[in-house]
Amino acid sequence: MEFRKKPFAFLFCFLSAGIVIGYGTRWPITGVLGAYAFFIILSLALSYRYPRVSFLFLAVSFVVLGMLLFQAHGPMPRKARRNDLRPYYYRTAAVQGVIVSHVQKRKFLRSDKYVFILDVWRVKQDGVWRERREKVLASAFGPRDLFYGDVIETSGKLYPPFNFFKDTFSYKDHLARKGIHTLLSVKAKAPVVILARRKGGRVMQAAMWVKERCKDVFVRYLTANESAIAQAILLGDRYLVPKELKALFVSTGTMHILVISGMHIGVMAFLILFLFQALSIKRSVRIILTILSLSFYALLTGAQPPVLRATLMACVFLCGMLLERQEDHVNSLALAGVVLLLVNPWNLLDAGFQLSFMSVLSILCFYPSTYRLARRVLRLKVLPRWADFFLQSLIVSIVVWISIAGIIAYYFRLVTPVTVIANVLLVPLLAPMMISCAGLVISGITVPVIAPAFAALTKITFNTMVAIVLWLSKVPFGSMRLPVFSLWQVIGYSVAGILFFVLIGRLAKRLT
Amino acid sequence: MIVLTRKERLVLVVLSVSIAAGSLARYLFRSFPASQKIFNVANDYHEHLRLDVNRASVDDLKAIPYLGEQLARRIIAYRQQKGHIQGLNELSTIKGVGTFKWQIIKKHLMVRP
Image 1 (cartoon, each protein chain N blue to C red):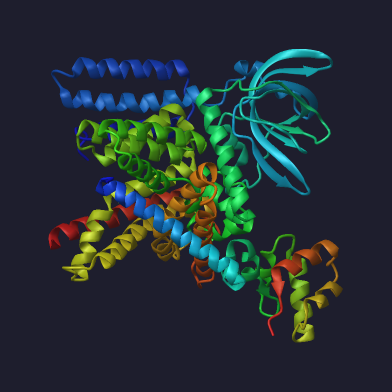
Image 2: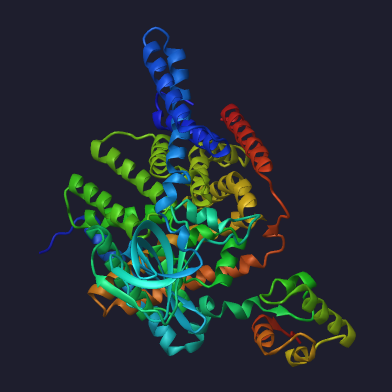
């Protein structure tokens, strides 16, 4: 890899290595800091006389920086955790705090359950208020009127997260990566007093308001499950999609349709850009407005790692358009990765982050040569547009499937060969689905007269998608469960996969 | 006379075609209820996932929520004893199938003639 052209790829590789070392080993923070200072000074001192040696030390300094970052975001030392909520575990306590996330309204048996993140300020027990600062994941049962930015006082039981599926997925670790170490359960009978409203960030508050309006439109014009799918695809809220339906998407390897990722952001960016273009807005203003709209959309969808990755990449691409400079896609991807790791190094261990980056990287690096080779081997010189589109979709689908199969096998214990066909059929459906959904939202809010027409279109596209997924889930050997797939097996598979694609690249070069 | 750019015309065409297609679909859904049933898979996908109790294996039955291995084996044993299960009602006589499990079984199993 040419690091001169891809400085962020260089940074990303060494930073990630440092984070992995930091995860696997324990070093004293002073030692890590000292090592970082030593290597960076050495690299600067040798930069004129020995540039190659200087580069080597710079690389090592980035590895140490990764370790330092990981330590800074890792679990707090015992002394520093004096002010947390652990002394109150398994006991009922009154808490005061502000809601810092979207309030999810879920169904729980016959009642409602509201799930949100509460930034706790104070805890009261035995009649005494004590200052305690920690983010907790709160579940409040019964009918509630809660919104992002509300300052509330309530009482409930505090306890640590449980580890449900120990061997495959740790719920405790998943929450810890988001900085949550405590759960709060508020019974239906317990009062939730709203002390103040609108105390959150203004932009986030606006995003949450738009989200609520969109939800209202979906609930008004679509059936329960269609509305749940619309909320997953457009707003990033998957929790309403029934478990069995989600299982169908997982078993056919098409869960990425229900999770906002690069494709969704791409369609959204194209839509926004196209609309601004049609409104005859000046080019530079149009691009800046699109960047702002995409950032707002990322906030609205919860700013999960795949959304942030795609938004950052789209913004870099749009900045390149603005400055009329050709950007390097791999470098943009690495920049997005570096930003996400700087924000939270635990992102590197997140399945969504790994799948998102691996799939985009494989498309950027392995797809062009595989496509060239396929055309050469199949002796296809001139192809009709539709056939070329089909071939391209098939090759992208195969390349991505091979690249992420190891990660999927590790996290989900699944091998899904049916994914290759599923993606060819479903990915082209995503754009119509998102366009009809966006049309429904806009018309539902502004011109309700035409909203039923968009609702009918949304209904057709969604049900077609579910029918295809249902049909593919019944394909024999389309999805197979694996008993175990260790980390070493993933590494072995990845090395074999890279060698395979390198071979394909060489073969394509020789033949074309 | 209003002069539109190519992009503006395209947006208007896409918009009008979407509304026309949606309106047509809505008309069809209203006039022919059967067509609405075709595009209702997202809501009644359960119907398509039902297992035939006369062909299901122990592993298939175990995949149904709240149905353990023991009960799955009992259902298979009952099927082997009877030869062919005629209706789902028969399963309510099996030991371990209470009201709650009966509701689950009804949702996930079927008897194909």
